[in-house]
Length: 105
Image (cartoon, rainbow, N blue to C red; front, top):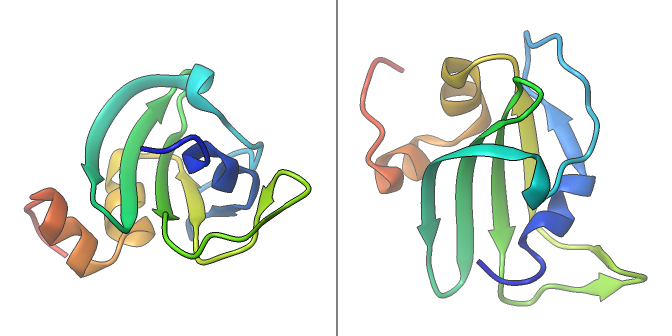
């Protein structure tokens, strides 16, 4: 994880079917780290937040463009009302496989 990982949580998308606040979050809001993969080019994390929401971050480390302290690239964060929704609607099959998440899709 690099210093810009949580900056993409300012650009938040709510997972379909979740009735949760779309408030940005940062490291201080994380109650539990559920899954992470920290590669050379990208970082992926799945979290349970202090307010009960679940969140995922996909952060592209390479070619990040930062203007006025905001990331303008492929990085994105999702929030959902449950672990199942964040994992199966907020992550791609490839990311789930890379994180070792098994189960019905």
